[in-house]
Length: 407
Image (cartoon, rainbow, N blue to C red; front, side, top):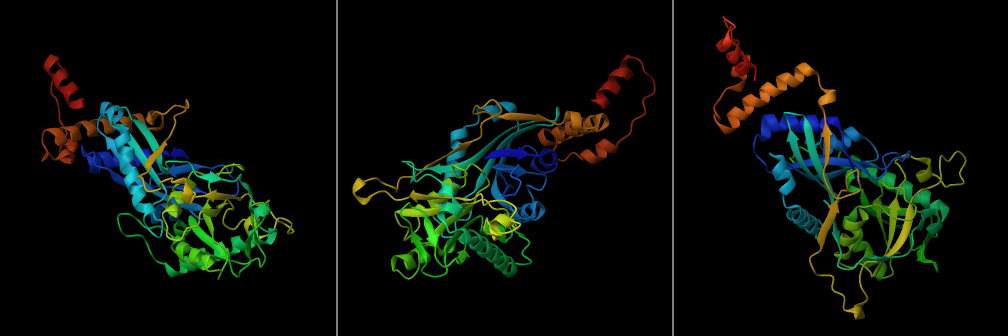
């Protein structure tokens, strides 16, 4: 993942620092989103805007189809020294605890997270920040076959069938949850958020494993559901009632050889689920909602592009005789690298985008608020800011008084 905070986010952070946070450094819930689009220009990017504090539903609604919210935390510190000296390992351990709790759930909510560490210098309008996209790291890496194009792993018609089943499932969930505005502080998101990760299986016993390790669907029709169905569908497969389910995720990246970052936490989740087999077929779904590549075979007339999704087979559980343990507490990784390719913070300045008169007014307002925060909590800053003073005489004393008032 790569972070993409926009100007609206910094302005909203500055406003909340003045009007709500004050000197409080408590973590604040925040939401960003990533996209799966046909153009691919935002591949692997987590955007965070001015509505980041409004909840997941507001973020997903504003972003539109193909956008999937990412829940997280903003930790805004009062000084640059505190920003630099904060124990980053302790922060990441707290994120690891969130992810371990998400892994233990049946629905997998909260598998995609973002952490934003900030320092807002409101005098100079400079914002220091460091993003992290926490992911649990297993004691030993998962073993996977090389990724192959999905159309090579499935019969060509099955790519379109899977896309149709996914669209139908999202429409069904949207109908069930219509009118949900996410009124809680966490801000639940529209149905598409639930299907950022999903499971699929053939609608009949037609899903088989080929000699090359790929999967093929003889019937060309799929069922798609949220992650809650994984264990039940694995039990059906173990009894021979249905074919093995596919573990799927909306993949915001386009690398043909590697899956996207969200797969890390999804694999940790599936390892912890009851009934999970040793080997799991994974689909990294990269087709944008409504794209012809998802709803039509590559050979169909008028198809806009060939499917971009990939498939791989992953060993999520160790061999029983290996003695490898999977119960140790996994730690989290995921701090973003800066523009120089090193682990470190970034800085953005908004001075060039602000009116000089607005800069002067905001500086006066900041000084008044600092007086209230640190010296006089009961100070009525609005009344003080509205006060007008007439100075008679511009001698030494008058000039000093004028300077003090302007400061």
